[in-house]
Image (cartoon, rainbow, N blue to C red; front, side, top):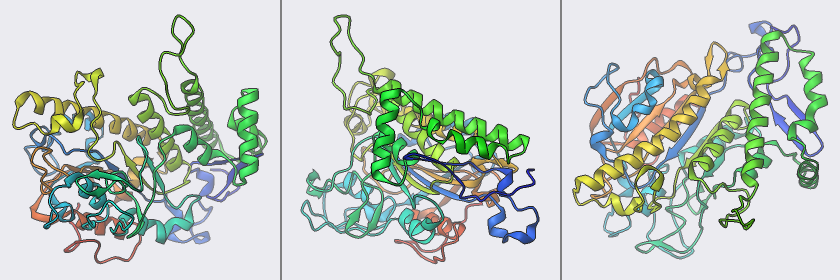
Length: 449
């Protein structure tokens, strides 16, 4: 350990550039009396991932219960981290049900997934939902990091329009809600996320820095090199290696974003596809870039709370690369067709594989005596169970991470019928240090471990 302690909030700074740091041994106190017990341990993070259109539950739900369960076909990509994976069967999202409002299950499930609320059926400006669990956390803990929360996804957010049977497009395209009438739009451009994470706090300097980087082909790290070199002199050998690995990861992500921004040309020299600048054309590349950035944001303690919409609810994109050219929403209405259900399962597994890529990234980063994954609570799932039935009970939900040691090992939990999903959120709020006995339609606190 270095003899000199540095603050957890230390940043590398340059012109228009700010780079947060990972957890280093030098950030721990020399003696326990220097800091409180809370400050001596790595911070806990809460992350929420949603996937659209439900799941093929027969390939999702394990047959065994308890800690010796085996991951089913869709989730077997998480097997290398099975001890971190808790499958939660039987949870219900009652707010997504019709309650007399008729069709619109996709809009309701998107709006209700993190709020537990039943959204008002309207496609006008009078939207009405409730604050989401991530924003309750952000309002209580957000001052501890540069960003109170991050809202990310692979599609844009809408704030108006008619998207699902008379429901506003704000409902199926936003997970995070600051309050009942204010959804927080997500960012889907990796370049914009990178600039937000590593750009300076002054808008003019940030723009100048980006312009110079592009013109001179410089890395964002070139602007903080002097600060980085000064910091290296204060660190022990283990911290130097960790800092080098982290800065390499930042540069690697930046380089891949630069390459993805270059327009590919056909043999005739004419661009062979139109693409918005900054957003990769390939879905997998786009998803992995966004997940890499989220991993860096967590590693650098830029935020401890984030939401990630893999796709907007009701999404109907096809996945020809895995043999499913038909739209996801279309095949989710399978009518008990074995062929369509198999295609739904392929899409479910494809999404889960990308989530596993993110889990792998967290597991590789050492933090204290464990990894980032030990200090995370990551919800992954959908507000719809079977896409054909549009039911909102027995949801496909997993919780990944050990919650700072509160979860000893992963398990398959089967909860009583109609157990609110919000009971899980009450437990998560309490682990994050938020005093909450209830949230949404909760009936109590879920038993997780």
